Structure formats: structure tokens, C-alpha cells
Length: 560
Image (cartoon, rainbow, N blue to C red; front, side, top):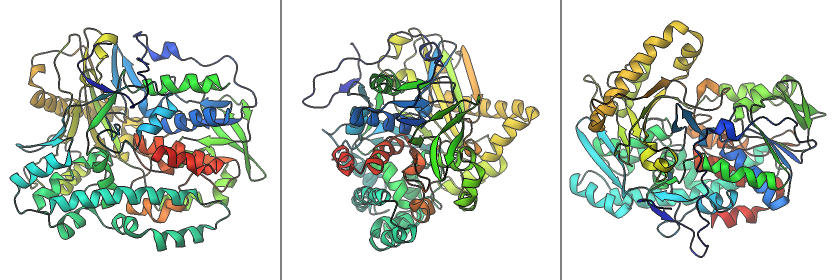
């Protein structure tokens, strides 16, 4: 395979060769609804996001279980699937993955990714400067090395904060995060109050920094100037919480994830599902796309199967939901079970993460585009340049598209074999946050859509022409815009990242947002059971397996 991208493989393991499907035929032709569903499966997994794929692959490989995977959409993968539109391919949620090479970092998620895909998925290293962020006319480049970042930051902002101290604290917090994860494996017979007490006593620094905001720690503990604190907060769009709201520990873990660079799956994110599904099928399992789950069947306090949208009932002793906590407990559970366990009141204390709106552009020519992700911070004349919280509030409360922020990327540039799979094509995606209120209006008010789409399209296109001037004067063959970007049609408020990643999410709510539910036979996986994002959801599969089987060493093996 010829490519200019830097590829790498796990040391000591022979190159497995490309796993990507070379045919450009749409995924809808590769996957279809089965004529007959698997009878009496050992487990049912609702949803095929990476959390569902992870647990299904693990059960198939470690236990030889026949897993029935139910997918609402006509293609699998959740936010790892790709939109195939007019001959163009656009990723839907995997923009980049960090810390995937143990030779330059810890490679914490590489072992899990290799295991669930059978070691067949290749990864392309993005450039040393993997992201840039812009505040007005001020541009900052982020390198794949803490030392390089410390050097330019201290040179440009002398005396404006303890930058080295930040990186030291960030690394400690990342370790504390895994200690916190282990609290989610407490056996079900341990009362919730006891789990809360244990976490309160031993959660230590993780709990401390989860209850302090990003702004607070950067400004008051590390002595950052307002400008430098904003620069270190540029990636807030990855989790949707502005600096005065985002728990510092969660924001720090997000930044830590990319400290040694960014990576992209060769062949596009859809290859994750393409690698996992044959593993599940080899163990006797089955993928059923276009097969939405309607209700989880519960008898005498135990989950015994699933009722599908067409009324068909599939029985199994094990039901695992990757459909999000809100959909699982508020939509799929029978009403009496929902009331019995008080889920309505729990969700009244939290909310959904932001949704995302998008602009997708496809060009019928091969254009040189950057591999980096470009972050443009929201900017308004009446808001101070580095006041991210005020700018974000102005954007969302007033729907001020002119001056909106967003981030740009080119799937055709990031995937080293894109041109092999889609010759003569180039693609660009621009994403920006959206509110649940916008999603509601977009879905329910047809007269709202044209004005909304025009505002999004015109202003995001202005960002494209600003940062990618080579596209000026070129007419895209495909232009798509809308909201939400997410792939879960039942997602609360169209959210992209499950429940809001607030401090309460990782402290107060961590004891019920866990793999084991109070209903026997029903388990939760995906972002809400562990942490937001693709890697958080992928790791949740390992967490769910460890909690389900008691095989904690499996999770530790992957972690180490």
C-alpha cells in the first residue's frame, strides 16, 4: 500500500495488511437487514456505537458468545460510521484519536483498539502540528510534544503562568482518572451509599479537580493570565463545557489525550465496524441493521430480552444497551421499572451534552488540503477576544451565526487511502455546537429550517474560505448542512456526547452511571457508563466486560 502518511503497527506483531474495504460501494449495500434474526442469542447489544462494538467483540472473543447486535440505522458504527453522500465519504464523529502509539506515549487505547478489531486496523499519524487554534487574528499551533508546546508558550507568554506545572498536573490527573474508573466495578451487592462513601474518602485529587472549574485552576492555582487560560481552553468544543463550567479534571484529560499527537484510522472510521463485525459473526453472532429496539422486556425485575419496532420479541438472559443512559432508562425501559428506580428524578438533575451542526462540502477534484484540525474561536465585536465563555453565551443565547466558532477538517486529507477509495474527490467538514432548543425547532418547525440552514452555511463557508483559500472560486459538487450531527435518532436533545460532562456527572452521578444497572440482566455500556468521546466509549466496553464477568485483569491488561 503506497501512502505518504506515517503508518505504524504494534511492535513485535507482523503488519496485518490493510483492513479497509477497497470498493467504494456504499455501506448501505454492504450491510442489510437480515431476513431472519438470530434465535436465543447469548447476549443482545442495543446499538453499534463503538461501546457496543467493543463489548460485542470482547464477548465473542473471550467467551465465545453469540451476540445479536441491533442497530436502528441502516449502517453500523454509531459515531464511527461514515456518511456516504453523492459519491463522497464524510466521517460522522471520529475526527482524530490520541495516544495510540506506545512508542511515543502510553498508548493506553491502542491495546483495546487492537483487541476489538483483531489487530487489523491501521492508524495514520497526523502531522507534528496536529491542531491550530485562532482567536481573532492570533494563531497558535499545538505540537505532538509537551516540551515543544512548553517552549513556544513560555517564549510567547513569559511570566503569564506556570505552564510546566500544568503539564505535570495534567499527567497526574490522567492516572487518577483510571483509579476513578475502577470504582465503577464495585459489585452490585455494595449499597450505593457505601459506594458514594468510598469515593468520597478515596476519590482524592480526582474528586477535588472534578469539583473545580477549568478557569479556577488555570487562573488561581497555576497563575495563568486570562489570555493563556483561554488558549489552554480552546478544545472545550470537544466536550461542550466552557472554561467557567468545565470540570478541570475532565478538560485536562481531554488535552492529555493528544499530548503525543493525533491519529486517524486508515480507510476511515467506518473500518472500526468493518473489522469488528466479522469477529462477532465468526463466533455465531449477527448484525441486524434497520432493526430498532422498541422496549427492553423485564419480567419479575429481570431483563429477559427486547421487543423490536415491528413487535418481534427476542429473548436473551443478557441485554446490554449502548443506546445512551437517557434512551435506555427513559425510553426503552417499561414505565413501571423507570418509576421504581427513580430515573425521572435523576435526569431532572442533569442534562444532555451539546448537539452539533455541520457543513459538509464535496469537490469533484483532488485538492491539496491540510491534515490538521483548525479551531476557530467565536469572535464578536462586543466581546473581549479571549473571553470564551462570554462569546459562547452570546452565540448560543442569540443564535449569532456571524462570528460563530467552529472547527474544520478534511477527511480526504486525513485518510491516506481516501483517493484510492474515492479517486477525484476531496471533502471538508466544519462543525459547531448547537443547543437542544435549536434541534427541537429544526425538527418541528419546517419554516425555521431555511433561515437556519442559510445562516449556518454562509458563515461556516466564510470560515472555509478564510482558512482554505485554495477553495475560493471553486463550486462544491455537494453541500450539506443541518443539525444534529449525531447518529442516535433518539438522542436527548440531539446531543453528541451523551449526558453533559459536568462535575456532578463524575462525582454525584458516577454511582448510578455504571455498567451494572439495578435490573438483573441489564447492563449499560457506551459514553454514559464511563466517559464522553470515542475512546471513552471504547474503553466502556472493557469496563462493562470486567463488571459483567469479574475479569478485572482483562481491563488491567488492556490498560497496561
